[in-house]
Length: 221
Image (tube, rainbow, N blue to C red; front, side):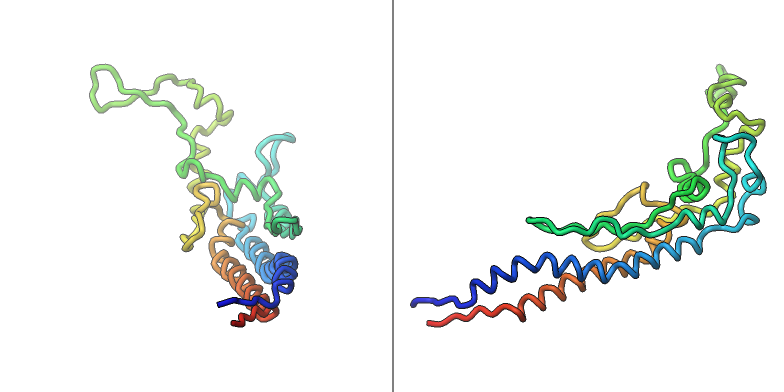
């Protein structure tokens, strides 16, 4: 039984514009949501009175640990639509939210590697005293590297901050691990990423529906 396929040219033509249609739909769908992530992240920036008082004081010399300033931290958070291009074999949509200030970046990720801060001393078991520990050296490398009169500064600094937020587990989406934990943009993304992924899926489905309606394939015996 012979089969005649009508509309092949329309299908091929549809394949040429489907990438562009999908790219535009995704861009339009996620742009306001990503802007919302940036604004939400700014709302998580603590005021100058909500951080350790010493951090909000002016630093001694340029290059030292940066002074905390809520205004600077908020101003350093923004949104960039990034590269949105169509290629011969696909397209690229790379919208992103950034946190560019030094105090904002420190508040974002401090303690992400070590939630309890750096240990001020290196401890080793004492000889002949099971279960007892002593300083390996009173001026150990760990102590010297602090360059501070308070060897517990790191622990106290981290303890004064709120815990970092981890990303939620979303079906079919690979998690980012430790590098996607944070207190500002990563916290905002943890809360809003399900909406962004949902918008992308809806945009893809809308393109498929549009493509199917615009292309007719008829079979005749």
